[in-house]
Length: 463
Image: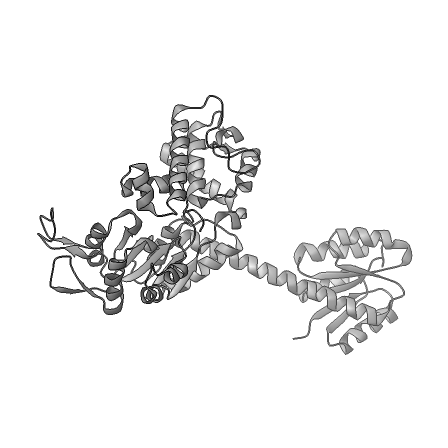
């Protein structure tokens, strides 16, 4: 369909010449001799672009037309025609919303090029507006359907993730959610379940990294009475509990080799036996797995079965680290502070400008979980209803990681937390990210270490 162009010019010969040239160039063009006629025609059929003289029956006729058009149809582009002596006025009109201007005498070939250029600008603006509307709609849908906005973010990376979640949820396929520690992998898994046809059935979660091999197999597959010391009764495993619903296996990269074999069989045959049992059980489970490790490298290293990897890697979803979507930090802060105020039944504090700037500059190795923990500590410790830079204990003014035990007097609880956090971080680095080894070095049970890693938002060290 040809683009519609309205030509407004009080000189009839010039007006008709421009209209005819535009029609020959493929545009749907029509003319008006002045302001009132132009407004009448524009109201009847809004044009995609308007070419107007700046001075007609009155010196400001072109400016008035520009204001009226932009007030009713902001996407319509306006090209001004002006005499040499009114160039400054034309520049001022461009600041008011005009797309471009031409100086008389008019070169018709140049005018047509200008019209095409401003229509390209309009097309770009329309595309941007459509994208904004789509993003706004998608965000409202996500906020409504994703547990009142538990997954927070409007950045491009997050919008792409939302779109994929909505598509994935409709299928029964296995999903592998990857991303650094604290990026919200479990929230994504829960969102997929809520949006799936299985939403009325159970969502069962297992933290694979926190359990030793024997305990993990019992958790996954259940056990019969007398299967091992302390097995005083039969117990159903998580696969049975999730039958008809969704099973979420967090830290899938930590599963021992022997358990990987049993898990592969369940994925292939939809059947298994309880530990110590002989009866084969059939289940219908949608599996979602998550890891912050590079499973492809683990396959190459021989620590993770390749056949199991491909069974899990049907639909991959990668969560971006917080440092790659910093524009979402104000939204996340607003979300967490609002939730904390409800939970603690306290007035919601204001986040100071300096504190917000620091939060946006920080690299967040623990990602969203670390941000939430930092805000909770700041919420508790701040005074006067304002969170200031001094209330952010683990960061310096430059946004880099602060010294792990800064000088000066600090609250005892905060000092103990800093010391504990640093010792755990160092143990994880020394153990190469192997949680059971780090727990042994610290003299902790693996389950206790796993809890503290989540509490402080400590990621696995880089390879």
